[in-house]
Amino acid sequence: MTNQPNDSLELPRIGIVLPACDEESCIAAVLSELLATIDPSKYVIAVGVNGTSDRTAEIARRFPVIVAETDARGYGHGCMAAIAALCRVHPTVGAYIFFAADGASDPSDVALLAAAYEEGNDFVLGSRTAVRSNWAAMTLPHVAANFALGMWCTVLTSRWFTDLGPLRLVERSLFETMGLRELTYGWTIESQIAAACLRARIRQLSVRERPRIAGEQKVSRVSWRRTFAIGCRIMAAGWRTDVRFAQRIPEVPANCAAELVPQSQGGS
Image 1 (cartoon, rainbow, N blue to C red):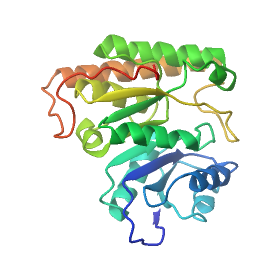
Image 2 (image 1 turned 120 degrees about the horizontal axis):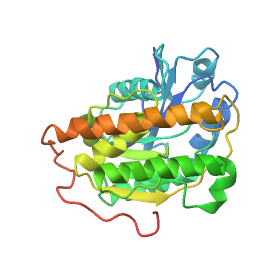
Image 3 (image 1 turned 45 degrees about the vertical axis):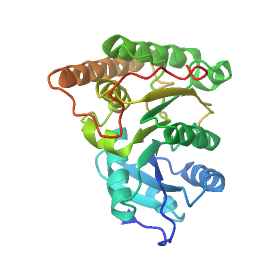
């Protein structure tokens, strides 16, 4: 099921993808702030409501955004549903920005990722762990876990990562070449490792992490046992991705780099 905004003569170049599950309490505030911040001629928003049991989709449809629903619960399922609907409505979109639907992402950071993309980068990661002001919102165990998982990506790919931040940009042809399979907890780590294996131009930028507005926390701020279990699943997904790409010679998209590019000086 999809909801489409009014057609416009403008052709947005970047799609902002919000996977949302049981975000009834915060989706309106998140969309209101995001729409007030972005340039509608440049961006279009797509919400992927996945496995929800509340009125998230109904509330999202009150806004001039694309809304797609799937019964499959999982971050990646929401992203894929939103992207499929987005591409049907705006087939000219050239990149996707993945944005938290719970208010943790700062809309002002969208322009930073877009600027890095316009400079020629194919994968732009918003890193939160190096910014001390983010630690209160994330909690130190969450910071440490994400930094460690970023280092796991570094070990597997020899590319420097300091986070598995949800705020990121992926160029469309690179995204399609990735062929992502990890549609639950492994979604973020799979795309980072795939981008490195495909020798994409990668840039890492410092972004802000804010306290979530409402809704149920599904990964951080849970029990240590659950945190450890989720971390193991994420690491396993990263390993599977690295093995998958090592078994074939990657076909690099025409507009992706064939050589390694240094990370951002200020964003790591």
